[in-house]
Image 1 (cartoon, rainbow, N blue to C red):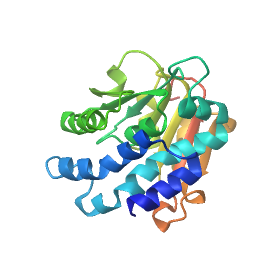
Image 2: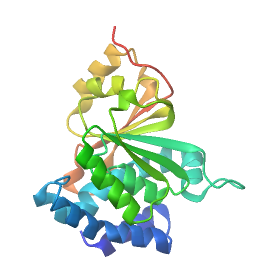
Image 3: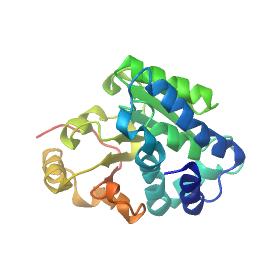
Image 4: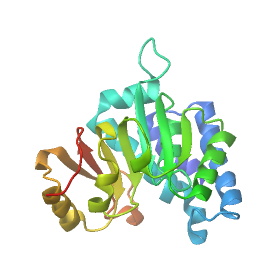
Length: 235
């Protein structure tokens, strides 16, 4: 996917990017290629699909929010009247090289993003890229999510482990919900987690990424939204 094809999709989906956002997205290609030659955060064979497989995939969370929570989306995208930020914070667990956090932070300048990973060299990449593009609404931390203090509005993450293993890492750390990018046949995995953690059916939502991005790469990939605040402990 070319950068022009990428921006066509983003502008059509989210409204025109401003010059700063366009340039920030543009810089990602060269920066990730450079860092990936030193610290592997993206598969070598996949780096040519950065904008499709990584940046757009991350932005599927924004597309879901635009439809499912439009007020929150507008605050993040355009800012609330009379305030410098939207008062909405995100914790990106297992961010790796900065996905989904960095693409979302560019699109949502009025949100605050903490990029968290337990592997220091990956945090180094995410931090350096955010700094290079002047992304001032992010902070990168080398830590396990469970050890972080405080609470965030939302948890975001991209398929770092099974849902059953992931949910306890988020326990007590969010007020609005979890937005988890996950692929594969989720019926059994999600059903098991819902039973284990006593989740009500109406509190968990799934959305097909390929309903937005019509590419076979995204077939079976989902945004899974766990709404509301709660702690996760098994039966």
